[in-house]
Image 1 (cartoon, rainbow, N blue to C red):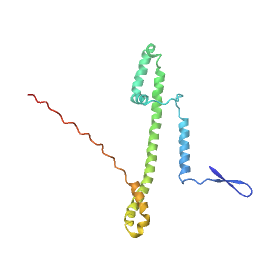
Image 2 (cartoon, rainbow, N blue to C red):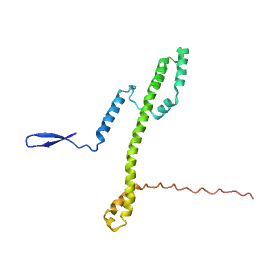
Image 3 (cartoon, rainbow, N blue to C red):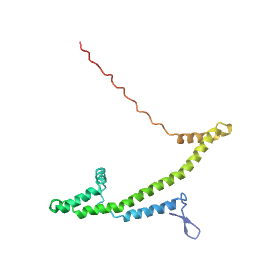
Image 4 (cartoon, helix red, strand yellow):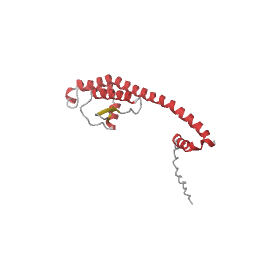
Length: 179
């Protein structure tokens, strides 16, 4: 992004200030990840999978697919219209090959999440320490001007408590007395 500033003899583009120092690196990494995702071998079907389809595919093991491929070879006339052993073994090979890529991507996501949390934790500890000091500071006369700031900090640092669900009283069992 650039902004245009006019000078006496022409127009000069000047770079827009970056929101923070980490933004360019993060944007470059996101672009690389998007490029990897675009290059990934995928089916031509753009239709998203339903939760039931995802569950079915995850629950079916490669061993079950291999046993089906063996059956398809043993009885070629029975399932030829449904699938071939080549298709089944291709799906097995795809999962075995790219399962490692998926695992590494998950490990990368966890690594990134922990890096963010580590950096944030340092700031959180500092902020909460400052808040503890501020609570004492506002009790003094000189702390009067910053009381609203400390009240704002209190609202943002305290978590709202979950309301307990009101239990409905169970009806008392009635007993029928025989006379």
